[in-house]
Image (tube, rainbow, N blue to C red; front, side, top):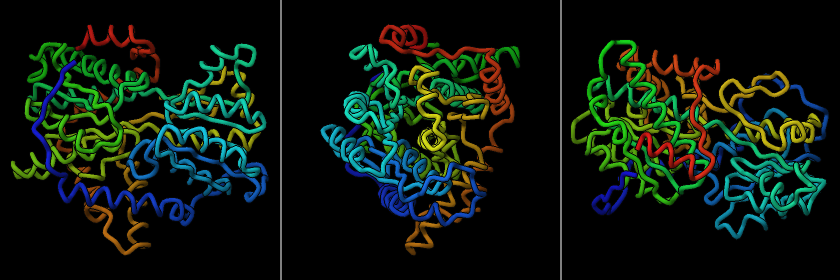
Length: 450
């Protein structure tokens, strides 16, 4: 593991503070705004809306993280828009809030589905799901059914409990390939990765990113018949600079972790720590200002949501983990009376990834951001500006999209070709991205790739 010691940071720039404030504005109005958008109707069972609610219990922090929690709440907003359900939001300020929040939701007679957001809610979900067998529970990134299997074997799989997981390792492989091919294109020696708390789900990001980098450089050699410039000369175990910060909330640590990576020669840093991406962005802003740059390199890579709009031209792409679709699909399963059947058929675990389907219907949960994705997230900012009269977007929408497009167009086409080829191979099952599930698994990855 590569460890960095950065100089003390006295403050985050006004630009980053502004982004944080604007994110809060966006988050506060998102639930209202989403119902104003005109969408095609979605056919669902005729359940009176006022008698059907879903509750979303957030991990620590709630709305405003620009990624994980915000995507979960977006899923609730989308379910409200399409299905007419009510949405109850309970924000956890500490881990001690998990069980009380879950119980509060379950005690509401109109709440039929309770969604716990985040791995740390695993044990709490099991406890409350056992207490309320007539309510449905879904956990995002949880391992609740494994706890049931270990502690309550006769109840496994618990019929009212569904773990929803994602193929983060595959999405991370794609952005790992993108980062390392960009490093070759621009003759940079390293790529970087800043992670949050070291929990098993983050091993998937770590492993996929490192593996994708290695795959991409082998692809380059095969395509061009020579070693990649820049990063190709860096020893395999040193190519990816990475660190766990131990937090999903301290934005400053995103800065202090990433700045030395850029100074050492990383072309891009992958944000795997939610709001710490704002700190990574701060590091990029400083470099861009010092060099008078209008677009990268250097770049950073967004996570969970499409974060390309935050600093257009400097976010090369985002690894989109569609937590919103997890919430949405769980709601749809309850409305269609398919929830317990899906639990039974899948031993209580639903995995959303690249090319995944439910009953023949495409249910993908992992992708790399596109210009089309960008429209959806920019629109939220536009609506927030109209409602509040405050400046939200860093630039007019067309300018944001133009900057992102110009950045992507400036990157050699063979970089995107390599990423697309890897995606196609993953989709067809022609390559297997490593999936670490145990400490021994991730140790093997680190022994191989550093």
